[in-house]
Length: 356
Image 1: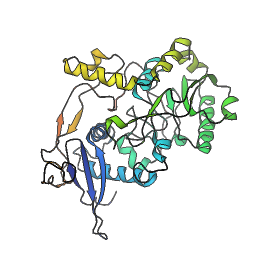
Image 2 (image 1 turned 90 degrees about the vertical axis):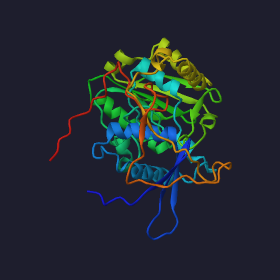
Image 3 (image 1 turned 45 degrees about the horizontal axis):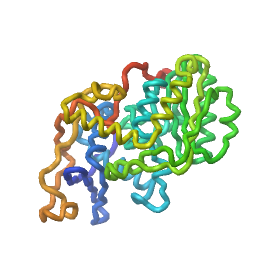
Image 4 (image 1 turned 135 degrees about the vertical axis):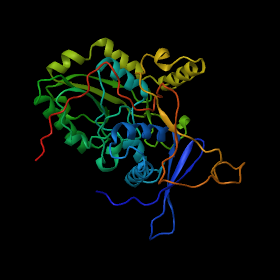
């Protein structure tokens, strides 16, 4: 059992939340920031994956721990080293939709609770991320079937280890297994070139596609998409059964290339906004968005946070995390940032766990 969680305070504004924890030894609060859209996403992930806190008593505290872990790992937001862009940048939503529709992808091998597209994924920190859907580090992950997206951080040693792990997974199963790997086009990797499971590869040219920023959970929506300066190499690694089921034929590959086209993400958001304005559900307007259950989001406070809105001199009331923020039902169609398990494809299968 974990120790009793200390008091966590939060200040909620219209578009973001400040979550504060004051250590007993330091009379200075440690504040973490998150956009409410991503807090809503974390709430959905938590509801779907966490089974020891049905009343959400620990939710805000665990969100603070999650934010603090990634801040510690990456450094201050928007630092000059661009560490977040290199290790936490994610593919745009239209690419994920294409991967699911044409290649049956339903799981990410390198993600975080902030940048994940699917409800289940692998991430670096199982202790903080598991409450939000993480299945732990990819190198400890051993599926026997399924179709997976692999977008590792740009670290040569990790890429090499991941390719070795994928090769072993493909060798050890006769079930359909497929990995679509996204790598920077900055060096030829011998293990990839020599792999017997390599079915096809393509290159998306630099400056001709975009990624989602590693700090997307803190940025304004207009700043989330960033131009990719270098090319991206896409490689299909599949065993025979996986190739027969999800093989990269010309139609599928061209659909993926089109999904990478700049502005596709913005076009998708505009179409979703137009559909919402006209009263048409996104599942009818955009077939690429898998249907899902109703999403929920914390109710925003009417008062503003001091220093955020200069037109108001009153600060937002401080609320203790001992009672979780009120949640209200919103649209029944899930936004591109919302996690969901797409329908139409079987979920990944894993070997049975044997406990002592």
